[in-house]
Length: 329
Image (cartoon, rainbow, N blue to C red; front, side, top):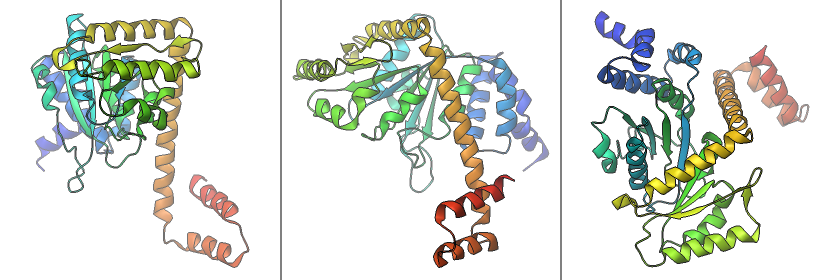
């Protein structure tokens, strides 16, 4: 690597400065490179996060989840267009399945969102899940910080679409949208997957197809069984869209804004963001701990502890306590 190339890669303060303001072309490139540092778990990541922290930017975080085929990418594109009509800048994190060969995102930047590719007010990034369960990439929280610092008013997170493991997005988003579509048994699947518990808003997409009214009716019935309300009384709305034509997107944005106002009004928005930061700190700490424990694999100390467990001189919990103590001392 040449000296000039190394300087470009390692000049983190310049990247953060370009990402947080200035020329739109430079900003887009800087944001892309910062998110790449996040995904690659670069040694420079600690410096990146330290420089981003004082910016203290808070974007509205909207999560979109649902089974494969319900139209998440098309719905995301429609929502981007609706927000842009309102003059808001938008970031999109589209979490794709990982290639088993390269470890990268299989689908790349979504074809259905290319209409926004030349818009300076939109930043779209595909991220590989890299085997992470829950429909998200492990790097998503840090990528959110980069987009917020870049001035995005709204960040839309579109999950992989892996079915019953997709509830993790609810812990990361201010508002979680669950997408369903007719003809896919989604009403039953939503109940089985526990998705009813994470939705702040239901959207029945492809509403021009037969069965859309049935899906909405089934949802209303299932919600009524438990008088489903979130937190302190939010009644989960059920909306219908035809995302491929952009129909219903403005109504969905209105519902998102209503939910945001409700969250802010009763303190839930701050509580959710504190919980999100708590989960992020915990995940970083656990990753560091796992790394240290991994360094001990095959070591004499770990072998000795394992021997004591096999001999019955030590139970596995006590052995684990000793192992943790040895790596945190």
